[in-house]
Image (cartoon, rainbow, N blue to C red; front, side, top):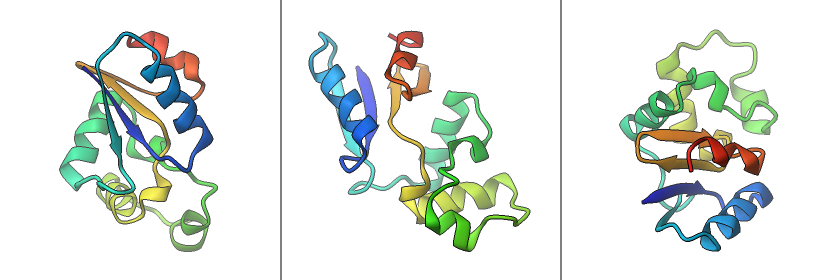
Length: 113
C-alpha cells in the first residue's frame, strides 16, 4: 500500500495523486488539510524521510516569514509549527512501506516504487 499525504490545493500534489491513481498500486490518499498530522505522526514521517524537520518546512509561506523566520527553533518547535500550520509542510509526501519521499519533482517517487 502506498500512502500519499496530499493537499488538493497544490498542483504538484494533484499531479502526484493523478500519477498514483493511474498506477497499478493500492493507494491511500490522506488529505492532511482535512486530517491534520499529530505531532507523533509527523515526527515519524520525518524520521522515515530521513531528513531534519526544517527540511520539510515551506519557508516561503507567509506564516513562516511572519512567525518563525530568523528565530532559533529546535526540532520539537519546528514540528509543532508544522502541526499547527499545515500549509508549512512540503508536499506531496509519498510513503511505500518503510520508505518515503517528498515527491517534488514527481520523479523522486522512483526511489520508493
